[in-house]
Amino acid sequence: MDKSKKLSESVIFPKGQKIINEYFIGETWLEMLVSNDSIFNCPIGNVTFEPGARNNWHKHPGGQILLVTGGKGYYQEEGKPVQVIKEGDVVKIHPNVKHWHGATPDSWLAHIAISTNAQKGDAEWLEPVTDEEYNNLQ
View (cartoon, rainbow, N blue to C red):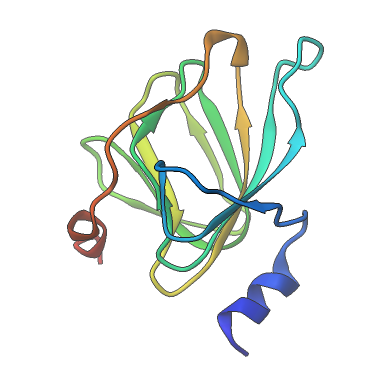
């Protein structure tokens, strides 16, 4: 079975729209499940990464929680070794911790991204994770 077929059969929530901005390398999609508002104050999105796709280094002023729903990926905090993440993993990211996450080279990754304490502000997007950094993880 090819990777695209596995992806389409394994996604719990809709894949959403392709993300088109300078904060992601490779093909990624986003489906907002809960919008940011004054009632719930907790935006939640389903993010899907193709193999090798990743986001830039970034920080969340209010922190973030990732619930991995499918595939296999990487999560790394600045100055720490990369962690392999897979379906069923929960990643708690403290406020203002510089980090990145994305798929491994040979697997897609889907996770629910929960922005906690959203009243503290939007993500601060930083430099890309270069191909050299990413390829040296293995």
